[in-house]
Length: 322
Image (cartoon, rainbow, N blue to C red):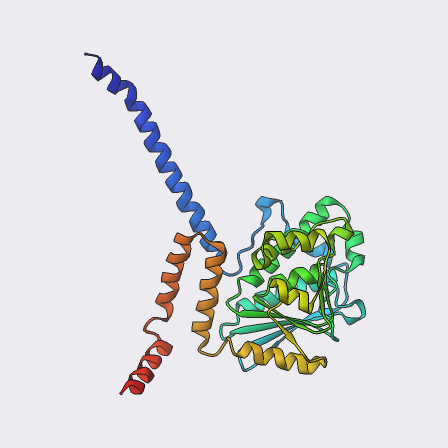
């Protein structure tokens, strides 16, 4: 006689558990969908007004600090050359340059034939980070966080570009300049160059997303040493710990750019649609969990399987085997 009552008592609990399971499933599906959108729909920022980020307000502030430029040159080879151009201040980012960088990233998002990108500084130095004039004026925590969100938005969009990117480090890459190198897929350094995260000595931590990317590149223990020690990474040390991918022996600015282009060309041989799909697939492997990354790889495969490059390769292989 007691069993029916026990069943009735347990029924609401079972219904509640089922509802909780459904809610968790929906939440997971929604979260996965948002993450995939952020990763693969170019142009979606990390931060928006729901995070307290108001881009127009930040733009108005940064426009008060002119100087320098971000220059983009598109080559027929499918390589873009992005130049940080403010040599009188070691290519430090003025407020206007920060805004121009976002504009160039948007331009690159719309460059459908691109395969590779080289980031360099003008006049044999990479970048000394933020222009101190802007830093001094934007002195409140709220200002700092707003600038942080703008640059994290920009460099995350940069990192997710379907282009294989290389930082060509000549001279010094300091502070924000060092952070920018971590947003590139590879780093080439000249023999006399140096990368240094000087943030601790400025009483702050990296604010452009450099810490997370540095951990991805060299591991958490090495990253902690580099950041807490504000270590000067010369080309040999950077190569040793995995920060640099190769040391170029050139010293002339034009010659170094040519060497960097030749180095990058080895990686981008092939049709744009294949190179771009490969970069997207690797990006999803870094940012998504295994299940999501596998599903995304499947979807990307569908964009190239049976395509012109695939059919041409099969035809050439068949002729080779005859």
